Length: 235
Image (cartoon, rainbow, N blue to C red):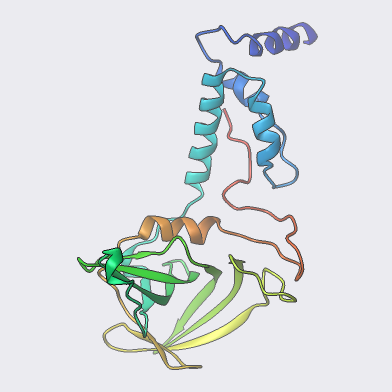
């Protein structure tokens, strides 16, 4: 057994081998601590394996992360559109406008996703999520009773943290009333949420809701599990 292990280790160190042993590459990856992935340790490990093997390892990790992203369909999405749109100066010739919005995703199995963001609307009417502004992500569950929808959720990610407020934040319950046209009204502030056929950023929305997590003790970031990087890909 010892001899086989030594021979495997030596074969991993030969940069001139044309044929890449996938198992060898995976054994070269750094161990995980609990459920956390350490990018710095992983990048240091890449320095000691062939470049082509490093690319394979990155590809495998990318595929693993992609498999953790849950699809979002347009029918599951309700949007509170911007009450006020902001148009950039004409000299920039951007031909778009932006405004703050809230997006609710009601997964068919009862899971729930929330995103506060800025939407950008192009001159053709298509709407996408702004990548340059602060995002707030929430997750939880929803249930429906007659013409009422109850949501239990909590914030799990903020780009801009709030001093003294930890992340994940405490659970909260919100109630919505439903209309015949399937629109929703949040009872605490009468905000209306409806379908948005012009929304064209479902893939990014799915990735944010599935993967973006932050752990904050009120003063500084702390370690915590990341759902899209939970385990080493299996050979």
